[in-house]
Image (cartoon, rainbow, N blue to C red; front, side, top):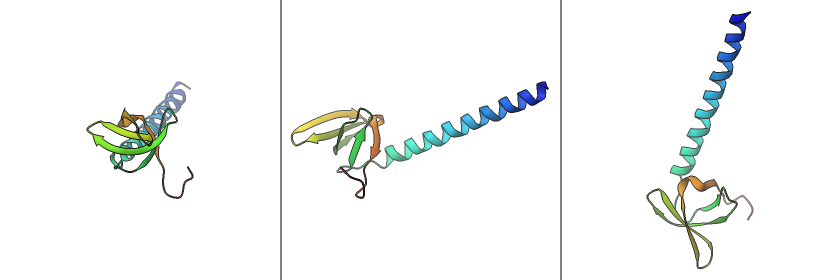
Length: 85
């Protein structure tokens, strides 16, 4: 009985570790694909265009003349041409 419980616990831990590894790879892929001019959405819900990339920071223009400096990890998604506004 104890071996079955340990086996189930080990399987759950392996599943959680693999999901976390997959999520981390997707995040790294997203961050490495950022380019100037890309439309992004931040975790706060703010949308804008990347104006400049400065190391680990991005300069995002939300409206003409309004620029925000944020860390790259604040990017939730990159909008593609087929997505809406």
